[in-house]
Amino acid sequence: AGQGYGGVQIPRVGDEVIVDFINGDPDRPIITGRVYNEASMPPWGLPGAATQMGFMSRTKDGTPANANMLRFEDKAGAEQVFIQAERNMDTSVKNDESHSVGANRTKNVAGNETT
Image (cartoon, rainbow, N blue to C red; front, top):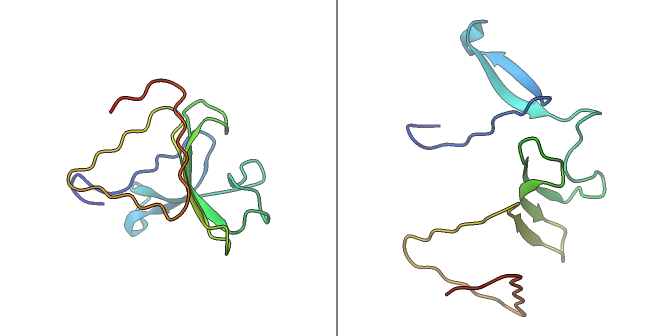
């Protein structure tokens, strides 16, 4: 983390966390990680999804079905990058953008499309 950049993952109520203390000082706690437990299992079932990894952030006060997701499937022959926006998805490209599709491309728009 630095001034104006870095990663943030604020634990939600009920998350099990690992707490350490900066220089052992009990007045300076720091969360160093979150862990799964019997009541809170990983988003992708194991061992069946052992080749999948990624990030899934649940909508605040939502259910596991309400989430933003970035998932990687690393199974040989089935590799995939999956992105899910629970509501809106905005992309900003400040310079060039390129797309290359080696086979088929499908696009579905349920509402209006503006170009």
